Amino acid sequence: MIVQVGNVKIGGPQFTVIAGPCSIESEGQFRQTSESVKKSGAALLRGGIWKMRTSPKSFQGLGQSAFDFIKKVKNETGLGLVSEVTDIRQIEEISPFVDAFQVGARNMHNYSLLKELGHQPKPVLLKRNFSAFIDEWLKAADYVAQGGNQNVILCERGIRTFETATRNTLDLNAVVYAKKNSHFPVVVDPSHAVGISELVAPLCFAAAAAGADGLIVEVHPEPAKALSDGDQALTLEGFDKMMKQLEKVLNAFDRTLKM
Ligand code: PEP
Ligand code: MN
Image 1: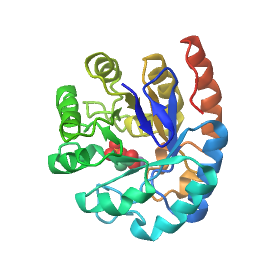
Image 2 (image 1 turned 180 degrees about the horizontal axis):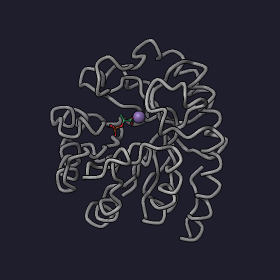
Image 3 (image 1 turned 120 degrees about the horizontal axis):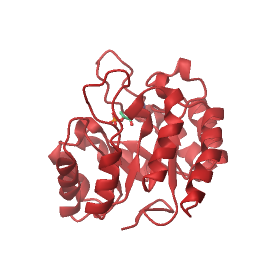
Image 4 (image 1 turned 90 degrees about the horizontal axis):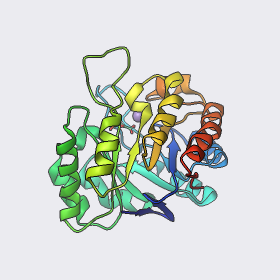
């Protein structure tokens, strides 16, 4: 099945890369990142407006104050935006600014949010909860689809295992399983899966080789100054380098990058 996000079709023969900061932090940061990832071949932007942080003391996102400049930057780059909706009450207000709603790992089991997103037409990128069985993830997607919105993109973002050296464990089993047992496109988020920027690129290549439909990757112009998830962010240059190698991996599987 193909899901269209803005003017980008996800789930066809081409491979889609969604890239941008974990959090949208300022007009300058969002513009610089967006322009750069576009040049490197990203088809869509990502960036959190509201954040689901483990600690309430951590940066919670710019919220509504970012709306004006988000519109400007989107118009300038011409790329669609995927951004997380953390609460039912945000759906309406964020809708004019996003081309797909992200449901975060922590909200995968929020069935009232999923039902509500099923009653509107925009696509939903549904992250797998870090403790969810694949079956629970696929059933969560059905909650959206049952409301009438078939435009669901599944996203594997790493699960909790006994391992603590990395942030989570990227479950490529889930990617190949979901590709076989669900009709929704499947993308991989290597950034939250591994949590260490140096290890992100190899997992991008592995996801492409495993048959994922695309990636969602965190990129920041100055990772050390990021207000969230700096440890796992690729630099602008690091992302560009990864994309060049990714194309070679895709070509080995007779696939190309969606630009
Ligand atoms: C994110 O995409 O920045 C995020 C919070 O992801 P997850 O819900 O997978 O933790
Ligand atoms: Mn993040």
